[in-house]
Image (tube, rainbow, N blue to C red; front, side, top):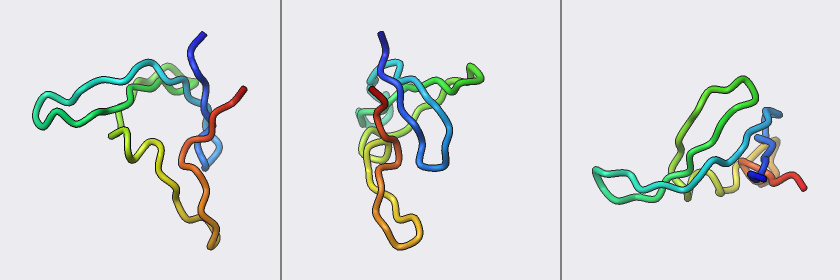
Length: 64
């Protein structure tokens, strides 16, 4: 079963796979929104902390 994540703004996403961006060989995360749209985001950005109301929180939090 694929790992599911909640975005800090509330959306639910499923991590599809890790891939490599051809242009610069940067690792990217391929993920699917609850509505079926597929997105990519650099791996370091996907897993980074963002500041919300002065508090650092994960951009995406894994759901168990």
